[in-house]
Length: 236
Image (spheres, rainbow, N blue to C red):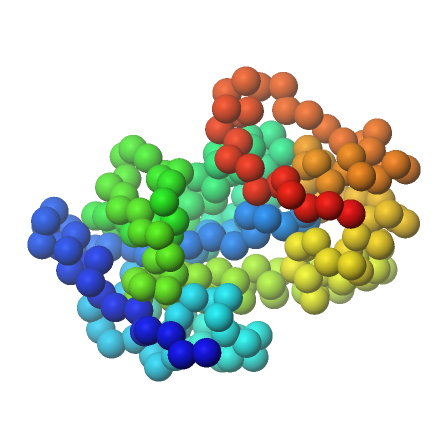
């Protein structure tokens, strides 16, 4: 399917209106997964022409995505990843966990960005970061698209490595579903129950009669208020 290539339009606008020079594109992957971390990539690209075929990672085949990620990691000025694990997601809620992962990524960059382009309409970063949110930024903004591809490929690789760590994880098919709900994943959960890498506060456990007693609940009102969803709407 044809698509428009991302541009530096937003970056140029931020530079012109704020004087920012180092601008990071930020995107996440793993928000809707039932297992594994939420992963955020921060990428600084400058205004150079990106590699051909760059777009939202979800529009690319797995093979092309992997090839492009390797090219992007050499091409970007700088990039870094941050993760928030299942226990942190359970403790904090998704919005706060996203912020934690994003701050880890941004602070791991060799230079601190003057501004951040954040994919989506919600600013989950907040102060002290200067943020511009862009709906579908992973399709329209070069830096965000680059972050999208790198984050997806790196997290997928992490989930593949997790599956290979133990026979306990093999039935869940993490190498194919990356921790997202799939028929194989759902069947394994029903048979074997959740692993230490599953998000134990999430509603999918309510649909598992043998295992629903394992579900945990956050007790912090502050954490509950920060929860943005992402765990609902998946029915067995």
